[in-house]
Length: 257
Image (cartoon, rainbow, N blue to C red; front, side, top):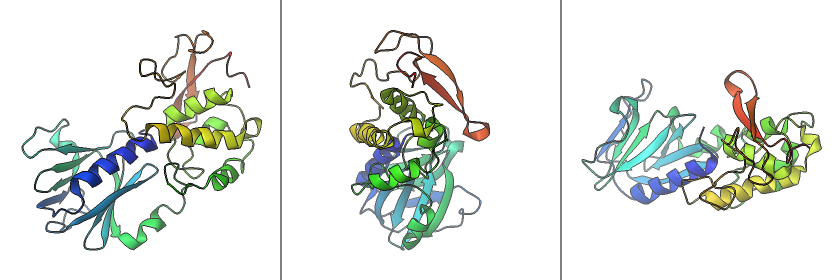
């Protein structure tokens, strides 16, 4: 599942390409939205909140989209070949010099722009917002002290934007096992690290947590390989159950807390 900074960057690129321009072509390839008429409208802007994106139109409507595991927005020049199959396209927007194609998008919804906040009211504060409320995020994180820290960090109701990469790397930087209870870690530092990592990567497609583009992650994706800090072999496992199950990585030496 994409991290919040991936959605942030996609929204900014979409905004730069579409804002202020008239839709010459607009298709929403979803049964509930297929009759929506957006052609001729002006795109007012594109914004993200956590892992959600809102595209705003001059009709005072917004299109909400969520990437989930496999969704993405691509930008193309007119006539340029798409990098994903056409049958995966859920939204097609065309202006004079760009095409914006939404592939495998989820939770597509056309709603009044004034109702955007209702759709995200259950989420925690957006880690990439200028007015990010760290105190609120901390209070939500510590509300369930016995919960595994890895699962708590992934909970978008705590703070919006953390995915499995940042969950893994924040736990490493805390020196805590992903299965450690929230009560065993410094919650304020966990929130601070989460924001710091997302902010550092918000303008690039990679999630670099080490500062080294050649070795981008301390433990994420490194099962069986040496920990970059101590050399111990990184271990892998799973955390959560059902649709919430995620791969987990940890260093048994550095993360013994």
